[in-house]
Length: 83
Image (cartoon, rainbow, N blue to C red; front, top):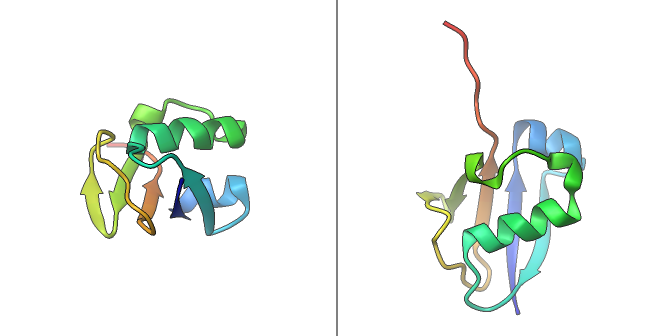
């Protein structure tokens, strides 16, 4: 297992009630695995994990990115805009 810090922004922070949480995932886990685990633990986040924008260690990453010990994962909710 490895530990990663998840930074929560905007509506994610409001829903969970924290600005960050520490999660353990299997060694070799992908961002997509982390998101699946997170949605199981916090079903109130709802929605599709594929729409969550992710940055790992301050760089945007795809959901196929492999996580490493002590990574900082920022979850940025989808933004809807009007025209």
